[in-house]
Figure 1 (cartoon, rainbow, N blue to C red):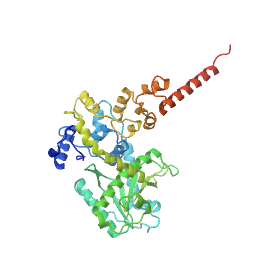
Figure 2: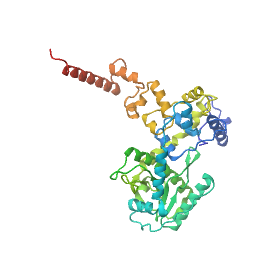
Figure 3: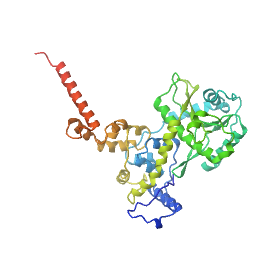
Figure 4: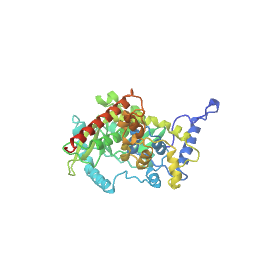
Length: 412
C-alpha cells in the first residue's frame, strides 16, 4: 500500500498557494511510508484476510499505519519480544490445500455441481465448463488476464471456472492484489466468489466464528470483483438478473451470495452453503474508506520513527507506542501484534481488554480502577446509567455474599 489521499499539511496557518500538487503529495507519502518501514525493507502485501481484519477494527491507528506502510507485523512482534501465534499451522495448510485440490479435481466438476445446486438451480446443469489459463507475469499481468477471462466468459455464455484469479482492490488510492480460491461465471453472466475452507460442516452447520471470518474475507473479494466490473463496464453485457444483489450492489453482475465449501462432517467429501455477504460487504467498504487517515497518522509521528525489525527492542517499543492502538480480545485471532498490545493494555488498566461490548457499556469509564471506584461510590455521576448499573451490581453482589455467609455460618 503506497498511496493515500488527504492533505499532508497540519500547520496551524495553512498556505493554500504553497500546497503541493497531488502527485507530489503522493510521492512524499510513499517516501514517508518507506522510511517507517525501514531502509531496503520490502513492503508486505496485504491479502484479503488482512484487509478484513483491518476493516473489523478501523479505529486502531497502530494497525492502520503498519499495514499502510507494509510493515511485517509478525517480524515486528518477534523483535518486540511478543511473538505471535497468529496464523495457520503447517498441518492445517497442508490439509486445506489437499481438500481444495480434491474439490477442484476433474476440471472443477464437483465445485460447479455445488454452485449449481446451492446458488443457481434454475440454470442449465454444468456438464462441461471452461477453465481458462490465468498465468501471466507478475500480479499486474495476472490481474489483466483475469479481467480478460471474465470478459470472454460472459461473452461466451455457459459455465466458467476461474481457478485462483488475481483481483486488484483500490484501497485508499493504492492497489492491493487479492487471490480468491475461485470465481465462477454463471450462464447468465453473473459472478460468484467461492471460498474453500478446511473446517468441517457438522450436520449442515459450521463454527459461526469461522463462518463469519470467511464471510468477511469473501466480502473483500466481492468488492474487488465489483471494481473489475466497473472497469470493464458496458463490455459485460448482457446484464444478469439477480434481484437480491441488484437491491444493494453497485454492479448486479457480482453476486452477493458466495459459496462456502467445507468438508462434510469428518470426511473428505465436500459440502457447501450459500452465505449472503451483503452486510459484510457494506461494512468492509465503509470502513476501508476510513483508511485515508493513514496520511494524517504518518504526519503526526515524530521524526525518525522506524518500525524495521532489526532496530533495538527499546527503540521499536517506543516507535510502536507512539501510535495509539485499540486493543480488544478479538485481536488475538486477527493481528500479529495482539500479544504486545494486550500487555500494554493490561499495564494501562484499560477496559478495552475486557471486550468491545463491555467497553461500549461503560461509557466514559476507561480504566478498571475507574470502574471499581464508580461501583464503590467513590467517583462517578450517579445519574450516569453506567455508574448506576455498576452500583446496583455492587449492591446485589454484597447482598448475595451476605446471604451466602449466613447460610454457611455454624450453628451456635
